[in-house]
Image (cartoon, rainbow, N blue to C red; front, side, top):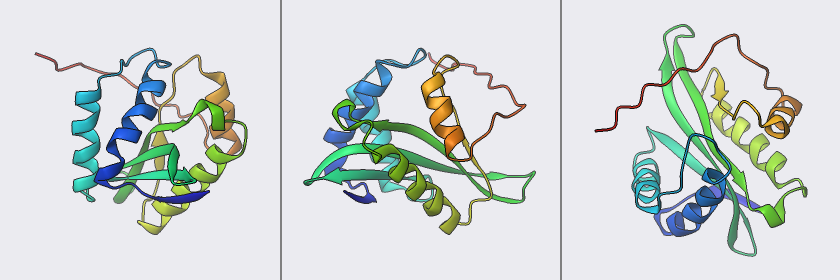
Length: 149
């Protein structure tokens, strides 16, 4: 397995992964056009974020988005991990752990002072997975305001 940064030519495979993720999540629905636009925006703007992919035999089997912002509380760059997904046939083989460990080190090398991520409230498997890798529950609560027309 090889882990690299995604490139524009990867967008079609990344949309397939996102479709599988968004069919599992309560708040999101697959939309290839929207996903394509967002993925290209991240790949073409490295100050916005990075998309890391795990490849096996040249095919993408997993991905994670790392988005960047600045924390006034910490006085520096922080990362938000989004869209971590492993193809179902590749789960349980350590792919997710290797990709997440790589992403954590990647964020450290980008001088990030903290990593945040969201999971569905009822996704206890994801909670255990992230806690196994050092993440802990925050006392903060996520609130959202959709700004759709």
